[in-house]
Length: 183
Ligand code: NI
Image (cartoon, rainbow, N blue to C red; front, side, top):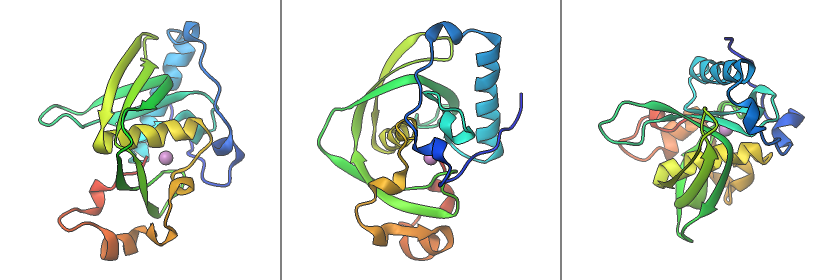
């Protein structure tokens, strides 16, 4: 296992469409060790989600810290070859951050309810519906697999800020900087 280097905006891998993973490879020791590297890297960089292109591997793999269920322990969720579909036209806006766009935060509006299909870390298909902030996190991560960054989705560029100015001028009252997350 190893902490990998997270690449930042400007690196061409972040702008490529990632390759799907051959499901037969998922149980292999090499791929399982790759998943462990992703988790270790996410924690080392203090992120709550990481997509493989962010460690310069153009593969359709996401790891997320799942802490959306009230009262439950956070757990890891792996999305391999994910597909998402909006279930509503209604959108929600959240301030997003990204380990590949360090120091900044931007307000992005996205569909607030989506259907997700993916393979898990064992290569088994699973599906769930994500809503609210969770829907935003999943869409942010899936965007990485499409060569997109959250800044591409900001409609109003006055809503892009450095972290310290975000905290001073934009953070909703009662929230700390910790609640706006790096993905
Ligand atoms: Ni990100």
